[in-house]
Image 1 (cartoon, rainbow, N blue to C red):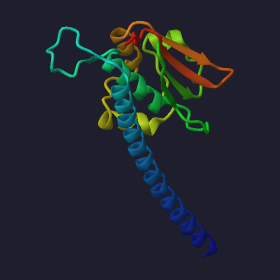
Image 2: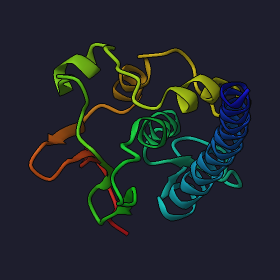
Image 3: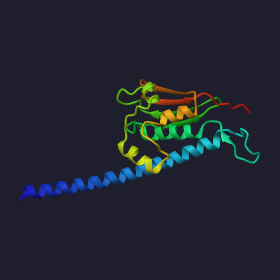
Image 4: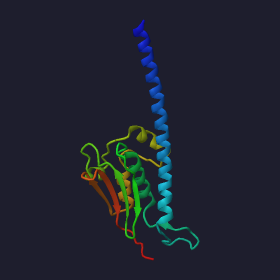
Length: 175
C-alpha cells in the first residue's frame, strides 16, 4: 500500500512539474517576442533612414537591410545560450552595429557552416514556437538571408569569451 501511495505522490509531483515547465516556457516565449519587438524598434529609431529615390515625405529606408536585422535579432534570441548569466548586447556605433550573444556556436558548428545553412537547435521550445510568434521563415536559412540582404556582415565565434558576435561595418553614419 505504501508503494502505491509513493507512486501516486511521484506522479502528482511530475504532473505539477510539467505544468510549471509549460508555464515557464510560455513566459520565456512571450519574453523573447517582446525583446525581439523592442530590439527592432531600437534599431529602427536609432539607425539612419535614407531616401534612396523615394518620395520627399516618405520615412525612408533603413541604412541596413531590415530583413537582415530581423534575421540576426531572431537568431540571437532563439539560439543564445540561456545557461549563461549574461545579456544580449545590441550596439550602434558611428561606423557599425554589433550584436553580442552569450555562448559560442554549439556542437562543432563553425561560422563557415552557418553561412552555408547548417544549424543546431540549442533551445528547442523557442525554435519550435518562433515560427508562430516571430518573422521566422525556414530553419537554417536566417544567416544566408541576412548575408544576401546585407553583404559585409562579419560573424565571430569567440570561444575564449564564450560569446558570438555579429558585426556590420558598412554603416555610412556621416551627417
